Image 1 (cartoon, rainbow, N blue to C red):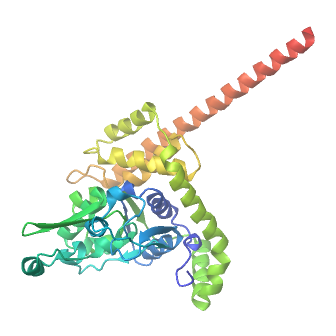
Image 2: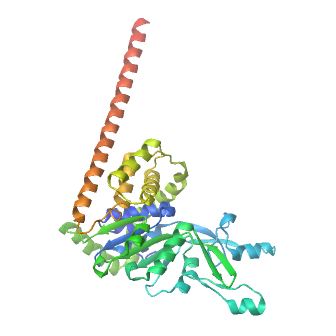
Image 3: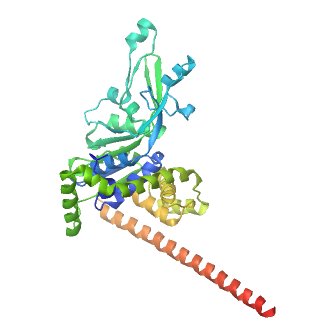
Length: 373
């Protein structure tokens, strides 16, 4: 993908890249909102991530990217063809990157049913929308805060439910709508309503990099990419492949990752301490922790995984009271997360000491046995 700036070549912005990668591992996390100034690689990162994702199997003629291996998710289009005994060819293609303009209307997003054709010919004809194209892909919305609130609601509903149902005059059509949702915005241009903000699973606030060395690196890499995109991509191809393989492996490992009741208590205690409304944040932290464990090739959730999930899921969910300084809230979050981090370090240290003590005791016992012989 020479025309796409490599994901691994993006300088800094580690939290944003982590949020995107974890959503790629488990799209059921619920998407990510990236808030930041202009020119901070928000859209560049989203496009670069899509280029990393593996190919998927699809029915060749299906406009809904149906998964041939998951009959329970098939669209009405596939079901109708199958009911007539038709064979559908299967092929594969890369995961799609679908860019939704801020001027998009509801019909453009969900699709439309041709009522006239249904009445005259008795046929159900559905014109697919953006959600159809985005199924099993990455749906990107730049300046999501400028999108109509009702449209944002539709997108978030579909992302959560995994299905899009269109009903008109007693006629309905359904198709799968499982996608990774990435929205970006510049807070200077207005914010999202709190109800919509909470429905984004993860939120990352980014800013321009202040370190002069890193800014020089950004300049150099950008100019090299513009000078010869093909050569630049080839230079970064090995690192891109390593990350792509790691994401694919994490996707396969994810169903094997387990958590304990103690992990659930840690999440619940944190949310209660911070007085976070609702329970969506708790669920998001757990899903994110599971994906982070899989990405690090572990089958058990650790407190570090929970910490990463909290850092990504909580900033936009902190309760805000009138005239309250939100800086204080973020400070409280940072302090509470640091406490969890220190507890995790102490726990790991104790476990290592116990293992060492057990090993020393075993060695001592073996020495005694040898002496007795």
